[in-house]
Image 1 (cartoon, helix red, strand yellow):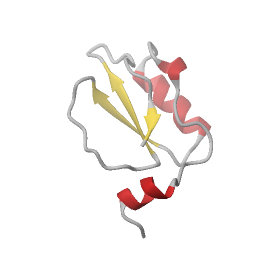
Image 2 (cartoon, rainbow, N blue to C red; image 1 turned 180 degrees about the vertical axis):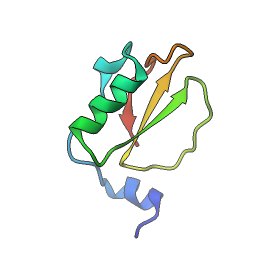
Image 3 (cartoon, one colour; image 1 turned 120 degrees about the vertical axis):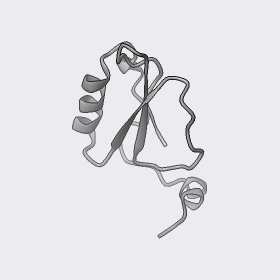
Image 4 (tube, helix red, strand yellow; image 1 turned 180 degrees about the horizontal axis):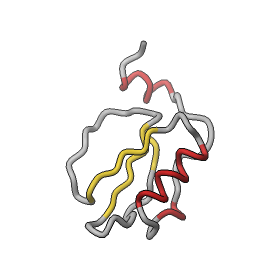
Length: 79
């Protein structure tokens, strides 16, 4: 299996959508369900806005940044 950096440089992408701008302002639980419904292989990861993140590239990961009220505050994207 390739290393994460090899995946990024090879241009490997998950089929389908790569971002969900319409989910900003939506409850995080609803956003994660919508993303999973669109592509069951994706792995939504919920983080508090401003949390530190790793710089590795994972094509099936979708980071969802939320506020303390569990509302999506940034555009969820793969990677």
